[in-house]
Length: 413
Picture (cartoon, one colour):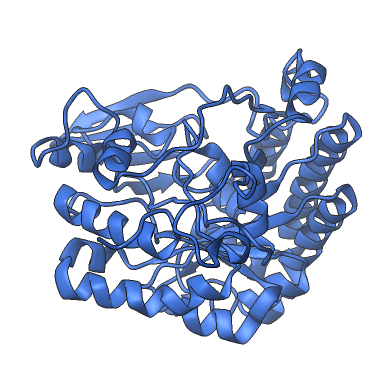
């Protein structure tokens, strides 16, 4: 899953804010009495409340992007966000020592990572999830653990092809494995009750998880050829996640955000029809969102790349109230979505990375396109995916400056 997805996953809590209704009237500076904590600001923004400002989350670079920025003026020994805030004159929120719940939704044990073959400038590798895939030998298997960089791969074999494969996979998701919760979880919960930062949980949705087991094509074919087996897998995953959520809530941890990773669309289309979503996926989503609402989780978000216009009404039906990252190149029109769905859905992302790369007038037009949605509330703007290396450091600074002005973190010169 993308390292920039979900604000609670940002190291150092790079939040700014928008001057909201309570702090905007006749004032160019925020008083201590009106300043919200990052946690309060996050929730107020995405629940259509009255934030003092909107969290400042422009989006983050990956390794290749940083390498380019180091040649364009970003100091080699500085964190890009620290430099960005200094350049823009942004006053950061006071640093705090954060703590994560560290509930483990991943397979345990993982597969052995190994190089199967090296030929013609490419590796054939087995990754930690059991996939056999081909990548450039400019990378290694560590790039497949996290979104370190933009790595194209060719899928050769996915881990579940037979009933025996499925039986082996299920044992790797033992919900009673002692490692699912850290040994000091109760102490963490006690500290988290007093938190001033947003805290959350991230896990895969049913489409994403079955895609990892079967591959995208394998999953789509299974839904048609053997729907009962597909439903067995979905229900297994549904109850695995539901059990961990229920245990977390019972132990006293209530996150501010639950992020369901569910990449299930491409350019201009969803992978599945509305009827198939309602049959196969909605019961799972509803099970989780019901648990979350009963526990008091304010933000229940689905992240999906691709065109989500066909999916948004289905997510709202299922109890989801936030969506990201809203890739513009896929055909998403965030201002239109915001007008259509109003306070039923909040948004994160939505700034066209291609316009950030272009800079100048194209970038200014993009930011003005989004300005009404920012003013309407329920929207935390940022780059619509990881920031690619064709976005220069000067253009990123210009974009961030305009974003800071629109969200109330900086004022026009």
